[in-house]
Image (cartoon, rainbow, N blue to C red; front, side):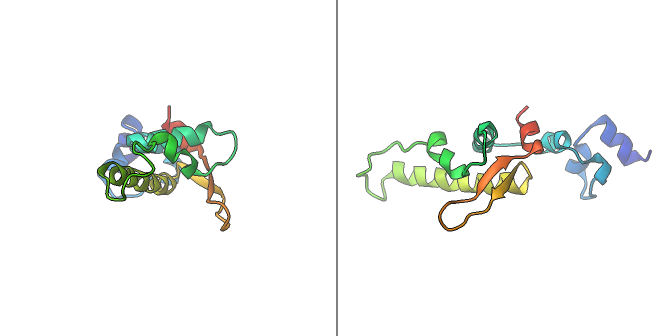
Length: 130
């Protein structure tokens, strides 16, 4: 066992955080990845809701649940509350991309022009929630 393997055995995730050297495939596991990736509050809540869904779901279906609008529909486009809400909604789209890039969710049914991508949590996604 070389030094990197010993370090990884003693401190899972440390190798991935301290070096650009790829982790050998035999060390890949959802639990290891979950230990390395830190989720922000929006990513965590979005992943939690996706993971709870019994079938593939459009991640954007949860955006209003996570950040409901706190302004009247008649509010002006430049209303600070509307602008702040729009930024939060865009942040949730970024969270979807980050969760996908982190292999915590996967696209089960790609968007088809009538509906968005339908996603589900991966094994690593479920592990990240524990």
